[in-house]
Image (cartoon, rainbow, N blue to C red; front, top):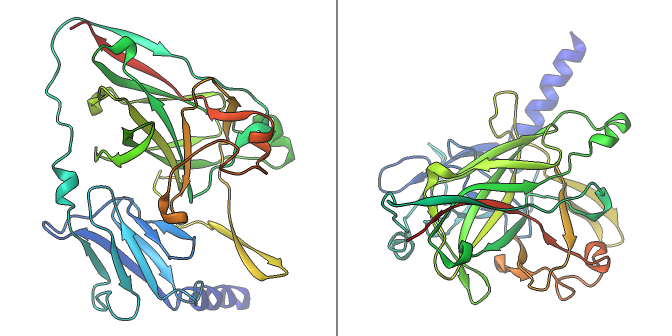
Length: 323
């Protein structure tokens, strides 16, 4: 009984100053699923599918301002003490009119078509893999198949669940990812294309190439091409829902305690560079969300780049129309 009471006391101490905050659309009060919450110091988290997230002032005593954003909405800066509705803990976001006007609306395409594939490239070397964290996003450029009208019907995502290392403590997991889409701005990811959220989970069984069906999403590739990205949101519970997990670990350094982003499984195998670089990365809570081509200029000390593994070999199936 004493142990039980101590556990309750510990939980109360940890979450006594925690707030459950809900993010909603200003116009219709609907929840904004998987919104991004930046703490302004290179760290952050995500709301769940109901627009909810928990912020603990005890866990982050040095944070007093949040930057909340979602594709299709204006970013909002709120102060913990003054701007969050104390009675309801609600934050509302305004739709971004300029982005809403750019939504690609595609009527059902008629005519003859064939399915064509661009194979994924992968391997099983865990030392040549990108370590997914909540702060990182990886984007790959896709062009129209032979310049014909092309719809993305599937994505082929190379993964490495470290199955060969399960005996060393690697067990079951389920990680929630999000796929997002961006315009091609002179060879790099540009403005986000606000399709509906494409959120999916991968577990330890996805150990080579994960197939993501997008046929119902009507995602057509513009003439200039499209960047497709994947991003970790966090671990899932047994019901497949996003849960509050430890996204950072604290490391003692000469400069004091540093929060280091936790890496999630599965890992993302990177392959040796192609003639045309098509992989970009960014840290969404840092460096003003700036995209960078994954080459030596990104990080000359990167082991991946030093070994020539500079592309994420994402593949796709296209529904290609003849006219």
